[in-house]
Length: 340
Image (cartoon, rainbow, N blue to C red):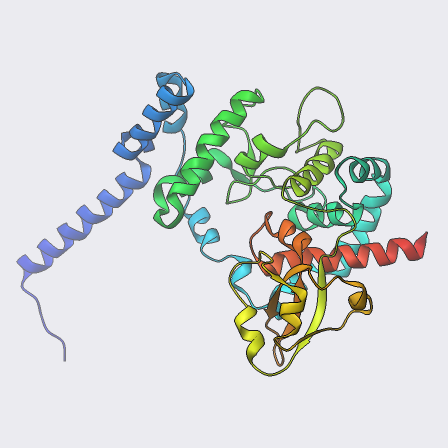
């Protein structure tokens, strides 16, 4: 049944729609600097970090809200189960290109291992996953993405406002135009995809040319990844992960959100966990570790992870990410050894 509405109601409804649309368009096109929260951010940058108010206001007025950034961060890869996540990253193409990267940069990788204690395969795996060895460094303008996430993504607004602060400080320190830098939707940059706070804290001039360049200088990227790992507790020669099997139900108390190893291996095995790797008998029983479960289509797989796995996870806090890095690195080491 169709109900006819009076003309006055139709006209009034049309006016409301017109006003709403005009208001939305105006909000989308208005400058960030017209907002009180952005003005408060500017105040802090001026008072705490000695930025000049007028140039900073002009810069932030040029930032554009990006709905594409909001959409991208709302659909992270890490939300997938392991059986869907793994094929995206642990691929023959990535491993093959990684062996080539290792060969092309063997001197820098060896030097990084000597200085920081991080093996070439793990540095290579990180750069391979993050940017496919520098091919995919991101096409989002960071001024837009960080401002959008800082002020229009309440779920993690505090974090991204901090990253915007670090980004402005970083570009000032490195003498980079903040309007020009492109990266990931979440503000990661260069071949190793460092966020701004990590760039400031962990990036190194590994090539010795007087500047830190993670976009074009592969030596700097290699040294910076190695420095990042060491600063987060990587130990040369220590274990990363061991495949495991489980029985009973006591092991379930080991599976926590945190990946930080807190129990000894003796405690873990006493709860129904058995290590399946050949070297498991040589691992001291007081080694700190924890247990993770990765979901496959049929049966789950279990891994005992150690301190070096946790160090990898400081790059990306997902167990899926760290396991992908571990498996790529393991494949790289195996194939590199076989070829040499």
